[in-house]
Length: 326
Image (cartoon, rainbow, N blue to C red; front, side, top):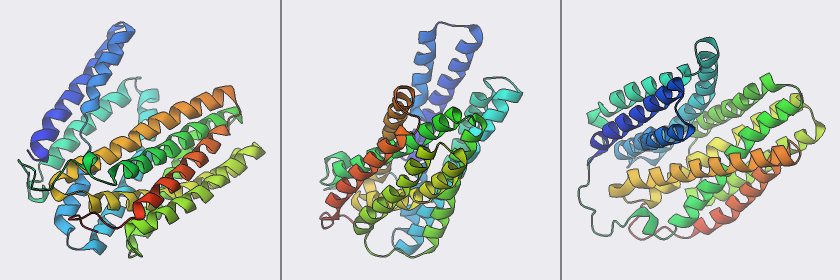
C-alpha cells in the first residue's frame, strides 16, 4: 500500500493511545487502564526503517553512497537517543510530569506527517509480491540475522540500565544520564566516520569482525565497574559506544542485501523489532542483576550477549542467497 497509507493511520492510533494514557494519569484511572492505553502506542510507525527503505530505493545502484546514507541515518538515531531523554527530563521536571509524553506525541504527529508528505522519495508500493519474493522471515539466513539484532539489543539494554544503576550506587546518580549520553555520542561520531569511508569487503564478512571489536570494547566498562569509579566508567562507556554504530550500520546493510526490494520495509522493520525486543530483555536482565547482585554485573551480561552475536554472525558468511543482492 505504500508508506504514506500505512504510516499515517498507524501514527494517529499511537497518538490516541498516548493521549489516552495522559488522560488516565490525570484522572486517576485504575492502573490497568494505563497498560491498555499504552498498548495502543505500539502502532508507532518505524520511521528509521522507512527512511532506510527510501535510501535503498534512491541509491540502490550505488553501494558507496548507500553506505554513507545508512551511516548518516544511524548517526541521526544516536543524536535522537541523546537529545530525547534530556529533553524529556527538562520538560517533566520544569513543567509537569506528562509534558515529556505530550511533546513526544506532538513530535510524532508532526514528524510522520512531514515525512510521509515527501512523495518524491517514497518507494513504489508492491501490491502483489513478485515471484520468489517470499516473506523475509521465511527466507534462509533471516533467522540468524534477526538473532544477531536481538543479541545486539540485549547489549544496548544492559549497557544503559547497568550504567545508571552503577552511577546511582556510586553516589553519582545525576551523572548517570550524562554517561549514557557519552555512549550515544561515541556511536554518533563513529557512525559519521565509518560512513565517510568506503566499506572493505562484503557486509557478511565485516559483521563478525566488528562484533568482536564491540565485545573487546565492552570489556572496558566491565573492568571500570570493578574499581567503583564513575570517573573511569565514563571514558569506558564512550569507547563501547563508538563500537556500536559500525555494527548496526553493517547489520542493516546485510538486511538490505538479503531482502527482496518488494519486502524491504518489512525486512527492516523486523530487524528493528528484534533490536527493541533485545533492549527490553537486556533492560530486564540488567535491572534484576543490579538489584540482586553487584551494580556492574550487567556489563557481564552485555559481554555474553556480544559473544553470542559473534557466533551467530559467523553463520551469515555463507554465499549470498539466490536472487538477492550482495
